[in-house]
Structure formats: C-alpha cells, structure tokens
Image 1 (cartoon, one colour):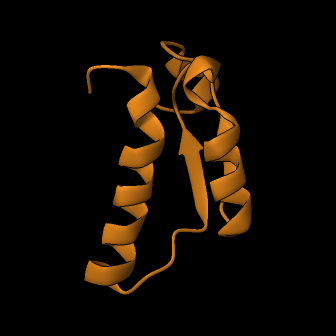
Image 2 (cartoon, helix red, strand yellow):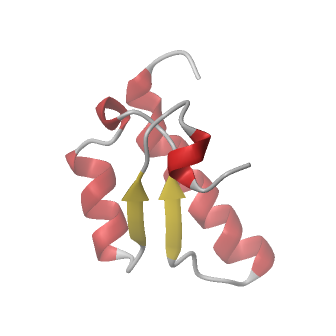
Length: 67
C-alpha cells in the first residue's frame, strides 16, 4: 500500500475474495488501524454489507486484548 486512500479498495477486494473463495460473508471485524484510514466510503461499505466493525488503538495490545 502506497497511500492511505488505497485502504478502501484493498478492503473491498479482501471481502470479495472471502465471498468468492471461502463462500462466507464477513460480518464482524476488528480494524486495528488509525482512524485516518477509515473514511466515509469504508464506513458506508461496512454498514451496507452488515459488517460490524470496531476501531482499536494502534500499538496498544494490552487495550486490544491481543497478546
């Protein structure tokens, strides 16, 4: 990824890959990224596709329940 504007298209491609190759719909997703990467297009896409997302703090695994 060269620019943060690519996040939306990469995420859409990722979810399409899930649908076609694994035959599953992505529903729950924890996005571990800074808020600046989440824009209106991504939020709208997630909402339209029934994906529940939760933003977490970057570089704070103790707050993200990640070991």
